[in-house]
Image (cartoon, rainbow, N blue to C red):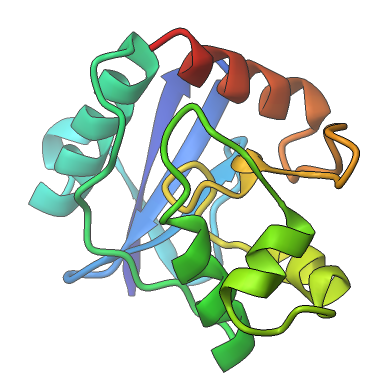
Length: 157
């Protein structure tokens, strides 16, 4: 059983989900993952309260990196991609090709795109920092408007 907490943010509502040990999901909107119990913040686990505090700091412009334990469920390849995404500094972007090269799979940029698409912990695993080879914004689970807002927020720091 996981617990979820819903927060209102400058990009709309987000739902953070965690086990006892790690954050397992962050999605846009208010839909709960299966087998998750919605908590009020005052009743949330210490980890969910810390996640909420760090997200508020991020949106306030006072946090550039997250220090939460993360446990995204995915394949070994997806895990490698998501680990690489966490190395992209706040305010910077990388292309799908650069991420493919970083993980030693130079031609796997389409597979990197699919791993980005399947990222279960948006924002904390910053898939919004990955752009097309020509510098254009490409698909994002929360929509391109949210991706653009997140990138703009990070550039202002």
